[in-house]
Amino acid sequence: MYIFLGNLSFSDILLSTNIAPSMLNATILGVSTVSLRSCIVQYLVYGGSACMECLLLTVMSYDRYLAICNPLHYTTIMDLKLCLYLVLCSWLLGFTATLIPVLIMQTLWFCGPNVIDHFFCDFVPLLELSCSDVTVAKYVVFALSSLATVLPFSFITFTYVCIFLTILRITSVTGRQKTFSTCSSHLAIVCIYYGALFVMYAVPSGQQSVAIEKVVSLMYTVVTPLLNPIIYSLRNQEIKLAIQKYLSVYKTSYRN
Image (cartoon, rainbow, N blue to C red):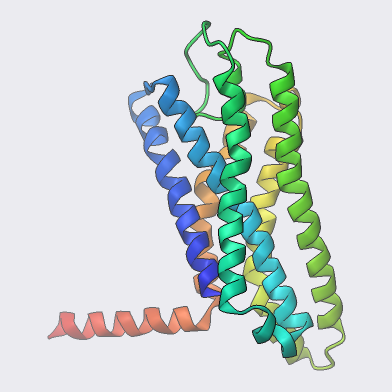
């Protein structure tokens, strides 16, 4: 669990540090200037980390499925080697999938306006600056983004159906609550993160306004990375005990 949480935290840090500085710069100054190459690099880092987080949340749902539905074989199946392999595959697949839109952008001709009505370099706002025909590019990215969200979310849904059926078979109410608490944090993050992604990418861009796109983008680029450590910390007894221990040591040293 801590291997997955560590990589999830690193992905959130990568996503936030990639988006937040340019967003704050544009908010404070009213305008932010960036080169086309830097804009594409920002999209690559953003898309890779976002896609990786989708895959990692899927891996974490599989981890919870094994822990609850197959607890006797959990330690033999989900060993260190498999954990590292799943994490590595999530990183590689996430950034490889993002390279396809980046390569498409390299073939486009940018000669028109140079102002993006957004707080970071997303794919659709960049396409609006191109003078080339972007119809094929939009369909390709829509297909990739749908696969990156629908397939992992379908797998997560399947695992949680199995988890809920297993929990319902537990006779004691205390046992049900204790078992469900082990996956409630992950379920909350999945609902927030995938809900924003579905609204942003699974709905064609012509059916939503620019303001809505900005709000939804803010949800999974800033709000979700902010909520992740809070949700997991509040639901994890070991983390809460470590925080309480640190605060008690700090109060003791401050008084002395």
